[in-house]
Amino acid sequence: MITISNIKKHFGSLEVLKGISLVINKGEVVSIVGPSGAGKTTLLQIIGTLDKPDTGSVTIDGQEITNLSSGKLADFRNKHIGFVFQFHQLLPEFSAMENVMIPALISGASRRQAKEKALSLLDMLGLSDRVNHKPAELSGGEKQRVAVARALVNDPSVVLADEPSGSLDSKNKSELHQLFFELRDRLGQTFVIVTHDESLAELTDRTIHMRDGMIVDDTRKEQEQTVEP
Ligand code: ADP
Image (tube, rainbow, N blue to C red; front, side, top):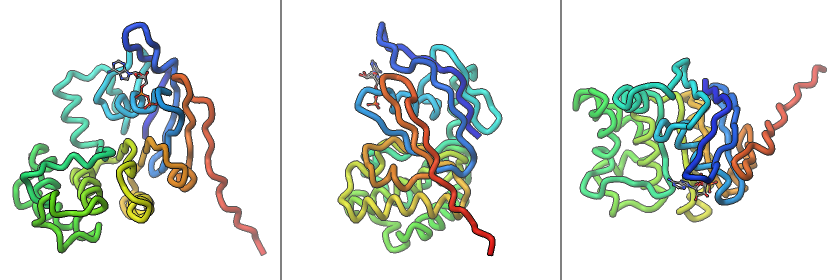
């Protein structure tokens, strides 16, 4: 699903990623943790095709993305990758439904298709009575759920989230975390989540610890053993 081979990234003389290799399987919910400055966001941006490594390769859904032209990359990103940020980044002048529709319209869906898809996602996320509300009329948790619906509107295979619960209180935080697992179970998406939130990292299938531009630990949760009678 996602194969990263020996990627390195510098900003000026600072080597931020020092040869990262990683395979993430379809349907895994993976957290990336580590101290500030470890390179977590840079790695997420590279997986999200928002930035390019200096060397190394990144393959998503069978497509090597590091050599794509910027037009092809934007198209690939729109179709394959959804993003959820710490601050929802919804457009204030548009309703919840319109915010969710926008990436679908950019990808060439008709207004009718985009609206249907937006309404069905907002319904699935428990927001059917909020579709015509503007972001300022929604609570923090609702705004973040609209942002999740927007991330899903083009049926991406990968959802990338950077501190998605960083701006939420603890109740909304745990609801959002629960949502990621429900969506994975229903839709089969792969989630890669950068987080400081230990309660989220503990829940994920796999936790990758980064420090100083390197992966220092990569732990999968033990599969529950089925004991034969
Ligand atoms: P983390 O997400 O683990 O906190 P980042 O990936 O955001 O780490 O940053 C890693 C290092 O790269 C930090 O020292 C940061 O200051 C630096 N950095 C990140 N983005 C840029 C950039 N666009 N230009 C220069 N330095 C950057």
